[in-house]
Figure 1 (cartoon, rainbow, N blue to C red):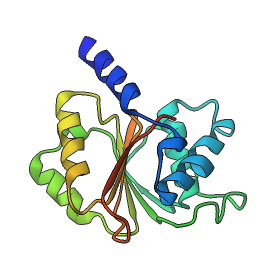
Figure 2: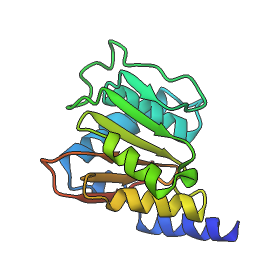
Figure 3: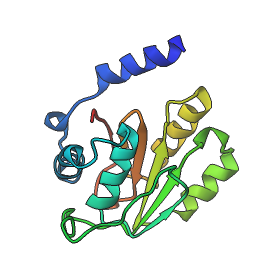
Length: 167
């Protein structure tokens, strides 16, 4: 328990908000998608608010995995909100249960049109180890650590970059 608290304080120390983001893609997602969504999903837990805002911002049509609450596809009000669309989102609940073979299969299954959403990447030492393995994989160009969730994108047009962001 103490280790998790220390990890969270380390996260807070390293994390930034939109002012520390130098990627137009991530800046837009953060300001227009995440920060603007707070008023719409106040009743949701933080990590589910993040998931729903991600689904709406990127106009996700198909979700793989069970997030534990009902997600809603984009509405007419949020259509064309994001600059880019990602029709698929893989929701990974228990990343700590994945073996290296499972991770390799997961990596191979992700294409340009897929967001990889990792629930609680700091939940345990194994979860964190698997998150770092995915984050460092050359197939993923953008990784975002929100502490309650980790998000990975395959974007060949962007240099590999990692962001540690507060919600």
